[in-house]
Amino acid sequence: MNVREELFNNSDEKYKNFHLSLLPGFNADKIIGVRIPILRKIAKNLENEDFAWEYYEEIMLHGFYIGYAKLAFDKRLSLLERFIPKIDNWAVCDCVCSTLKFIKNSRNEFLPFLGRYMYSKSEYEKRFAIVIIMDYYLDDEYRDFAINYLKDIESDKYYVNMAAAWALSAAFVKFPDKVRPLIENGVLRGDIHNMTVSKICDSLRVDKKTKEYLKKFKR
Image (tube, rainbow, N blue to C red; front, side):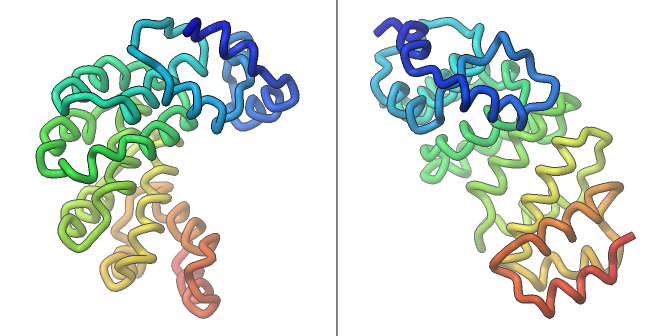
């Protein structure tokens, strides 16, 4: 498969312009305009990772390939190690994280690798760690690990803080008695506090009475 040719054959100018509106400051010359379902379909047919990294869609495909291809665990980690520094926007980060389903069956083995990025100073490396924790570690077994990490995040990076708030709101839905005290006692740092309250209030899985109560704690 000629990957770049396939991407341009599936470009959609209207979608490109819409997607650019969701990626402030992104270089328009580096996005082709291919819809995510089509990218996923292309990724599932990739035979290897031997293609370019120049365009937004090519980078996304590298991440999808790691999730979809039949690879050994160590090979996936090796490819992720190369891929993660290439992340430069929230969309690539979040779409790829949701595709790394292999983590579900190897969560304990994956933790040492994840730990490299949990305290990274890079905005998108840290967002990667947060979104992975939200997607694969918010359950009874890893609940305390996840929430203890999320509650201590302190950053001046918008996409880190928003990811932390998103993850905390997801944790609230599952474990309200663990997250509510963090809001009531003002534990969350900086902008994450108000962002978390807002994300919880946006959720369709939280009742109106709870939302009104939590709004009282906005700073």
